[in-house]
Image 1 (cartoon, protein in one colour):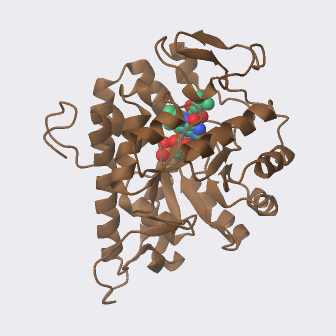
Image 2: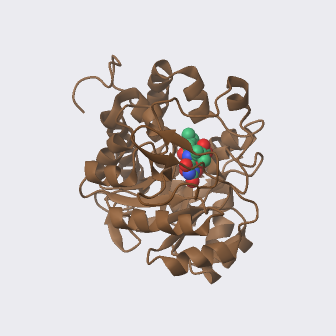
Image 3: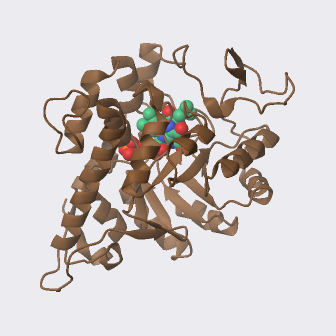
Length: 374
Ligand SMILES: Cc1cc2nc3c(=O)[nH]c(=O)nc-3n(C[C@H](O)[C@H](O)[C@H](O)COP(=O)(O)O)c2cc1C
Ligand SMILES: CC(C)CC(=O)C(=O)O
């Protein structure tokens, strides 16, 4: 990275330092939206703390040679086993928003999962970062036709997979946001994927649309506790894209997900933003991985802040991890260069930790390399 990051005097050497730089630049209300979680934030803290309770047990004299962290994900290469989790509202962090994030992902050779609630339209994200591997996250909407139209739109834009977030039958109770009165985007920003298709007649939305000077009305994201596996089946039947089910924590749901034909599972408690007191994602991983029996890739997000965290997750059965808040910190601290810095730090840490564990690649990581230390 050239020079300083977003005017920060010294380049950050840890994700924690990137967060500090971001915090210094962000509106405190937006910082709270990014950092916060549901209820007492027990799960937010647990996600990180649980990684610290696990130790790595390196193997020696294996002659493994230099490490290459590259993996294969849904049949295509990724340069590192760290992908970008879907997070909303990137333009709160940087004017370029999701465009900047996608460029950094493309340069690092990894996947960006574009949020349904992105503040740049998925077509514009793709156009900004030619060659980027994009997946598209969505919440199943009670208006099933709209869900399918949105999925097809993402496919046309070049997204390779749909990431269906299943942990949100209702919006989590985020007390920082309630206290701060943060319940909507500032006037100049919109969820650009939530505009009705051009040509769609007025009045077909689910209500609560906002008119906008640059296009059609913007729908609200509806979270609906009546949605079920049948709705996932309908989406799968209507689109050719592989489906990644995000928000799986119970092994029984992992087994059901396989029965419903998902291409991958993401173990996630939504970064502690939905149901508080769900156990740490890394503690849930082994049972979910066992339930899938290796039939599909398992990804994990929640609390990954170090290369050693990545190794622990991979050793315990994940094919890759995703990072949410660290990317937002990078974006707020230094735009595209800030996200690039976050991914570069993680890559360097993963490479070094792999080598120190005696592994030439993520494939060499096995559960015996992880020990619970307390
Ligand atoms: C500010 C913010 C916005 C998020 N928006 C979405 C979203 O739109 N869709 C989604 O599936 N998950 C969303 N998430 C959850 C992330 O995808 C991910 O599960 C979580 O951030 C992982 O934890 P980490 O932040 O500790 O890495 C969001 C998380 C944050 C922090
Ligand atoms: C716009 C929201 C639905 C994004 C989200 O999932 C979150 O804030 O955790």
